[in-house]
Image (cartoon, rainbow, N blue to C red; front, side):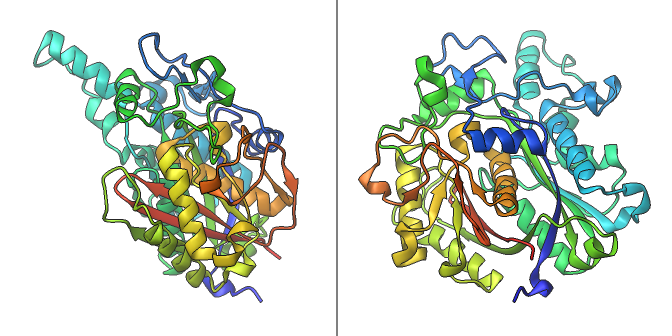
Length: 415
């Protein structure tokens, strides 16, 4: 039996990704194995080592915002507002009928607004004091995506950003569930957003040696768990879920897409960039999430992997799954959405949570594209280049970030 006392309903999904900016288009292209990786358009990347990215092409914030609102927001906030608006629409939620203070917003970003930061820093260096745009600070600080969603939609409940590197989106959704279960709010818009396809950021990651340099074969560049992987592809986008208490969702007769059942959080305390090699602390996050959900490894029918496509991370995540799942590690299906949308950093956990919910809803596990040569050090049951139909009743979504910050979410199908 499902313990609804520990469950929170997912009633809406909003995404802005390189393969789709609506729930339906995102899911259709994810299942089809469509890659969103292309040569960089945001700037002239000719001198960069990695010249490819997964951009939200032809993004138009004016679909939701007026021109004045759009000018006052950084792209990272625009993506968040558009995803949140799409999620509210998808949920059939009339915010005008809700008590504003009973609606919260937790939307994080790993980096904030590097576009404005770089632009204004160059301006300051060239022209000196007094030259920096007055909107620089309100654009750059990482809490502004959540604040701008609240400003746009009129939400006056708990509002804050989370910043825990690539675990950001997972933490945001998990914390949203927690404050709903505490009775502080009825509804939370939760997720993550990121837009860091800039010369400075790309060069920084390239210097670390973590970006793919398959510039001539961009659609095949992101290849999680494949033996020939050479790094991740920078992505951008946003993912927002509408979460509601079971009581609230049922009272308004909402369509419940899935349930958020558990959250596990740990910290490696090992390195600023490299995960703890044995994977034991990441495994601890999986085990805590399952315990919170009152489930065991036999209940899990799918693992939406962090799967960055870097040599170290995929190997260490494999170790974590082995520790947590034991003998089931080689049979439970595993795939990584990053094979198609790249690594969206602070948005990754939220976009991948959305994909996990849709897997439960539709009974289809998306592919892990570009999986051609199995890596003996990643001997999991990797779903290959084609989607698989499967009746999945419970799934986990892994998010592991720089600094050793681990967040694992458990979702279950709504009966």
